[in-house]
Image 1: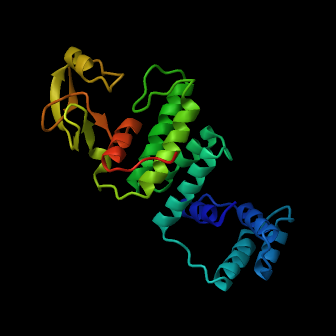
Image 2: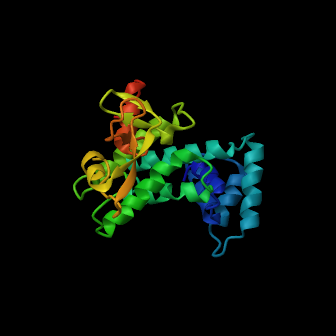
Length: 244
């Protein structure tokens, strides 16, 4: 347990008393001589932890060490990076890490759009486990599921450290002319849409559907920034890349 994990859990409202005592025990192993840390670690021996007592000694240590708690958004981002690195290094399983990150979006009441990446992936992983035949944004298979989550974690760290446009997830990439922008909407007959909109594996059963088209050339097979591929293309265009 790292301090960034403590701050992140506090921001999400998922912190538990034993998180603090576990963290304090690790600080003792690391050589801390703080009295507050020693007391906090010793509280872990109690069968039932008193949250107020745990909080009191945690705050005592924070104040004595002149640590300034991070802002809410920073706490979440730092925690997300810790989880992503744990996924990459196999300290936690990809499925467990993806589930934990998928909760960021609704637990923060959708304040930070970037976490939609993980809530989207969480939904698709659920569909995959249920054996559904289509997915919203991800091409998940038995063979690529683990590597897909790990690559998403690598990509996510880069995105967190990048300056993304406010409307990033409204953008789509047009492979015909290699440009990115907000697509137009066009009503099209269902059969024609199914032929042209290759990024969609599920077309509603109606006579007409509304699809997205490139605002410049009207190309239909656009790649959304809500997809892994779309984000990779955006990073490449901005000379960024996910971690190796």
